[in-house]
View 1 (cartoon, rainbow, N blue to C red):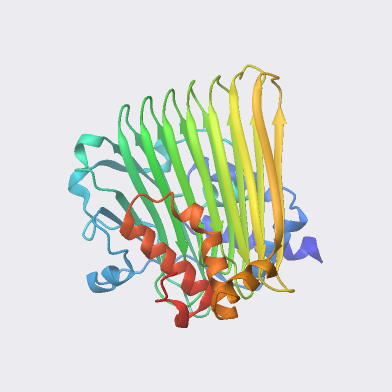
View 2 (tube, rainbow, N blue to C red; view 1 turned 60 degrees about the horizontal axis):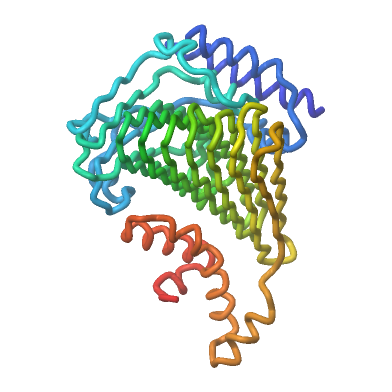
Length: 418
């Protein structure tokens, strides 16, 4: 029965693929790999929600500027708008940047993924065009690049959309990128996203991903970050909305003295299923990676991370910490931080903690005259602050904090300043 169910889904996906007018050899090879791969139990449990749905690809061409502004973050930025996977020239601030929107056939074999799994094959098999963006510091007026991805849900069918970027941060540049995913309505859709970033020599990248789609949506993403010599990356992911999420972030060092801070905060509620995976590959000397991943769960949350240090990579400093908070007796969290080390001249640590709110902390706050429910919310809010404090933009930091508080506490606590 399990095999039959997944075969039905894969046949639907194949039909969707061949109904596309622009499929290429590149995407066809990924479809072939997709059809031949065997699912793990965890992967099957994600795909089973699609078995009874009709898969379609619908692009909304009637979206107005007022609605786009309503969905956008109110920050001063260079805004790039994607609607159902398609770049919107009319609504985007594209005069500041150099970009190419090319067919996938021109990209074939240009870049090999750092890590491959069924989600990569799923995303790449449905690929038609790639948005290639070259970023230079002197072209941006110190403004962040804000990439807003708006997806339309459908009432009766599952709308399947693909967002595909390849961003090149040119040498000696200092760049900030905000990657934001939202739903146009409360109907179901599947967002397939692949975000590839090359950070060239002596550059700095500040990258923030905010996922705030509706609870009837599904989000699969595979993000690759390549770090050249003496470059620094600060990448933070906020998983704050969707029904089911599988977010993969893969990192590879392409030169010595590279550095990355890789952080995430997941807040699954109600019946959400949030999966966050990381893979960091150290293949050059003197590289550093420091990871902090947190889950605040009243539903299902999972973090799985692997740091791999190759034989020729000495003087590596790698840390991976997973801290997790269960909100009730029905919440569930899995955490798997792992190290794979082939060089003795390294400093590597990993740790994981899992628990509920400390009753002693609540008692202490109550003894100071604070209501017990507010005391609990203060503790919850403070749990996420070391992730939020990494955001340099004060307005963006306040917006994300309010989103987290609203998700955890509801509208009543949205305006409370802790």
